[in-house]
Image 1 (cartoon, rainbow, N blue to C red):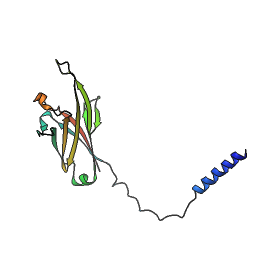
Image 2 (image 1 turned 60 degrees about the vertical axis):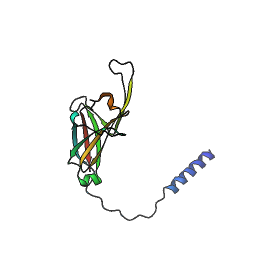
Image 3 (image 1 turned 180 degrees about the vertical axis):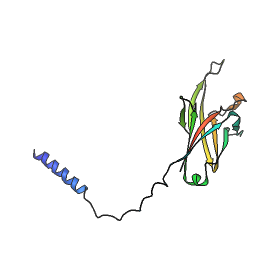
Image 4 (image 1 turned 180 degrees about the horizontal axis):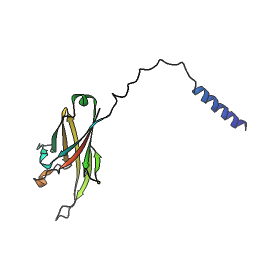
Length: 163
């Protein structure tokens, strides 16, 4: 019983010593009224049609790209805002889904009439500047020559601009 009392007394003393208060400090700066806080400025839906994909056609780094005008990305937003991008499937339907970018997914395909599986990784990312955005599409093997007519499908994206 004495040991239990001793442990409780030590614990109570330690709590009292740890929770001691010092002198009150100077008051902080006054807060703002909330008008300058972060908020969503705009949601922009970007439609990239199949015909809008360009091709880099370089010797060592082939990829598709689509550059779109984004007047919503002002110098103020470029310097101090946040841009988030999402790939959107089945936009404006009850089955719509979104995936945050960059987007990377592995696939396996059994081409028609073939007995060999084809494995690849699809990657979609983006960059932006004042008034513009470029979306990039690449496949892990970079072997687009398998089908010279290959162009990525039409895709939809949601750009969230916050400031």
